Length: 300
Image (cartoon, rainbow, N blue to C red):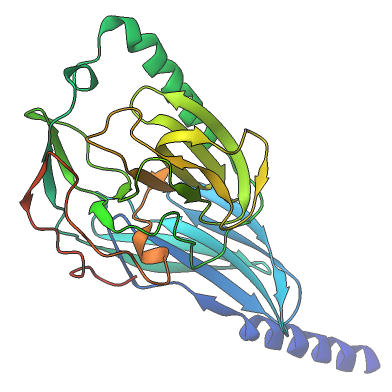
């Protein structure tokens, strides 16, 4: 009888523990946006998140009286319909449906040096090396080091928003997978969050480029720099100077190209700032065919 009472008490305790878990997953996420998902409970645990064919084991960390496991995920720019986030906690699996909300992406026309539209044969090897370096960096999966909101890397406004369909010298090219921010030549560029420098090198299109790993496949990139202040393998803190803005690579003038990738998917970093920079118009020799609707976006 005593054993039955103890077993019943144990089962009630476990049932109460399972019911105490709190899940946080948004029902709708805009195309090209990152979104945090989390689960919290009263005791230590490990959560397994599944999203777009990849699994992530996230040990919970203590936050006050609760333990919380958190992961940043990304809705691709071209995503449509419903997608499933699966969470496994304490042996229990829960599925959550997340709907992709469409975004009216802007379009921009730019004029650059012809060699950046149709690169000559002698630079193809460098372009291939750059692509290989970027792929290696984006494959990084380390422990969580990111926090929200992000730190603004430069104080200037947005000159070319994320996701714009771009036309260089009359030739359509891939969508803009970052955000161009106004910043004069030589101005300080700051890390958006704590992390480790994965890459700091000159690239053909991006010019002097830095990649910082913030954990869980979350990586920020900083392109067109005039100088580096960090090197690969170096740990950096949120707000630390990592380089100086410039006009190296494929550019129309000095600025910072900020990229933000989550598990290899490019997303708009602007919604992740406390006070997102405002759109201030295109840089020199840039004409927007249609005005970007910066505020007409579905919330995460």
